[in-house]
Image 1: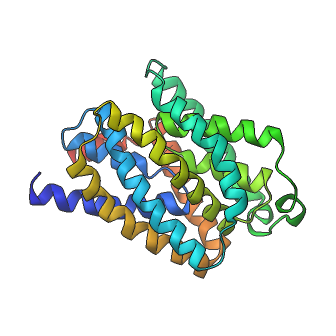
Image 2: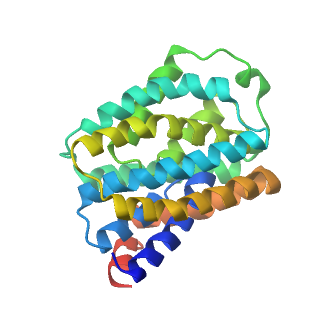
Length: 259
């Protein structure tokens, strides 16, 4: 790994950590960069998990320090997500990626409409839902979210945020904090599967992690300081860019491979 590679990975990591902590979809950048630097898609998917783990350690610490993290419910929801993530990491990559990406793009656009035209559900906490006991349906939902997270992780933040806001009643900043905790708790288990199958480049992974830690720290501080309205507009921009990429309107892979 050259010095230029080092700076590329750290810089990309800062962007990834920032985007993932505030919303999701940052792995679009890190996976593209890792493949650009010579890793296979499978190795990139595994190596990316190191940065994800480190960014969430920093994010959880910062959110907890600022008093916006619901640790109890986060741990409960992380249990089914963790079981699902182990299964997801073992799933053979034989799905039609094109169909899967288009379906995800549609989901993102639905969330974009929700974000733009129903902001009160994002900004105002629904206390009755927050205080309500978790149902079996929520456990099942978070199991399947975990399966997806273990499988590829890309965009997992959107699914977690939607579930935590609409299903658990959190306002956006607190939902982000719980989201980061859940990802932190399940990532080591899916990471272990990739380690066991020798699908990690440790030098690139920990170099990327330097940047993701910085990005996560900045994002977690800005989220609490600026509030839900700021986070909402960051999510709007990221959703538009991610959906454009998934629909093929903007090819970020080509940009990173040639830019």
